[in-house]
Length: 329
Image (cartoon, rainbow, N blue to C red; front, side):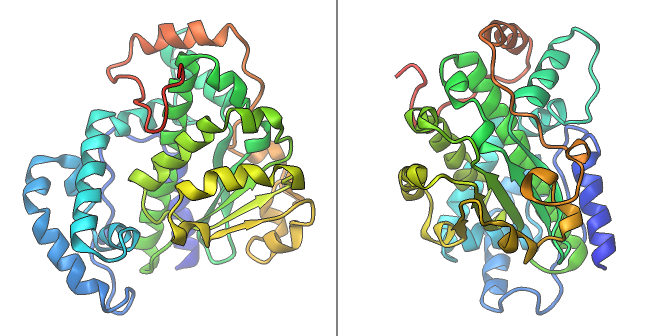
């Protein structure tokens, strides 16, 4: 079962999506796989969303038991809160063309040389900072975020770059959410991912531009419930623990409890969850960095902004709408 789940997760992360909503099967959770108190709430929530399902293809694709359970857990099992979060999420997905964004920015997508799609794909590969890392010992997926290398100042100085990176982050979260949904359906248990955040290189510039980090954090908590079971921040200089203090209040208490912070002594903690052979070399493992699908997070040149602005003008979907603060503010 574990190998089949791994294969399904690899397929959903590596296969270029069609641009249509992802439907996972089986849609019904096995008896006993969810807390008994959740089962009647899932049934009731599905009834409350019946009209949404008829009118919205995204809503219809997200009413399997495990996915509805995520919305309920994220809202402390309160039906009204889960219903509101689900509807707001589906409205946002349609307005932002989320399925198309994930397709267009998929790491293995193909684009005609010199086309707007090729410009965006190359920018993601070179300058974005997060991606699929592999599998933990229990078969669940893990993801790597190279936050310390990410040029936060470069993102914050140009609106076109900012909007593009928000699209990249949405595509990344969509991949993580899809992987967890598929893994849950195949394994018959609620599956969440492990996120490893490499803070090596975090600087005063990161702190000065923390609103970019706030923005990406807000997207996750607003529209992608219960993706992560654990977030391990490694290589964080003690002097910059203040960054966490700024970001932490934006997160729900249950999310904050999942976070563990380490300096350079992180490897034993990672090896408790992930085999050494599956960890990349820059995190103390034996996996060749070239095997990773994690982008390089290279510095952002000034000329990238105009190129991305021109590419964005051809897109069928509009720019990111800030959830926290306008980048010109």
